[in-house]
Image (cartoon, rainbow, N blue to C red; front, top):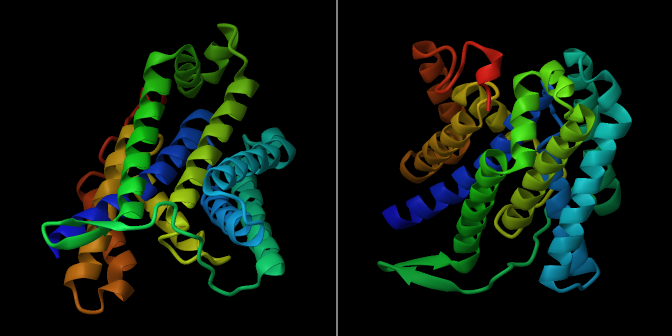
Length: 290
């Protein structure tokens, strides 16, 4: 039981981490709250279902098409609807919420509101101390680890990462230094959409695919970002695993836990924020973000 709990908690926390890091990246760089962020997870999950079951493509081709298509949708959404009004916070929230709803309704029109299942990327399982652990769960944990490490390298060891961090600290100064702020914002949006797409690809075989699957993760991701400290990628990463472990622990060890997991996870967030209102890694000065 404990081994199964750890595996499931790592999967849940890892998926939340991918989403939360992308959400924090956009908030830190563009200073906007993208309420359509988790809808890209939903689009990617449907992409895997459609390209494998409906088109009969092999897994690797399906992953490539799904990832590219989701990122293109994310970039097009930003460029067409958000870029010109990104400094108006409330307007951005309304537009991104409207976009998420449009994506949801498009999936209902295309596939109906029924539950769908995407094929397992790697079938089979391995026994760990008497507990069967599917290769799909292990693949998800491995993908999360590799992608998060790649993001760390990108942001801390590359010129593009330095440009992203500079833009997050002060867009005016970054612009004066010769950084094309508009391109950096577009790159940040692409990275965030790619992270959400990867999360959707790896969880499509593990979660039920349906048009409303973006809503619950959105609430949890916003809670995680607040818990970790607004704009703090490190805080979002740690907060994701805290919420992930709490959520899975409630399901595993409390009667009726599947109905309480969201409420108790949010309660943990509230308790931590009461003790530390700025979040785990919240900062006083904007230039300390990222």
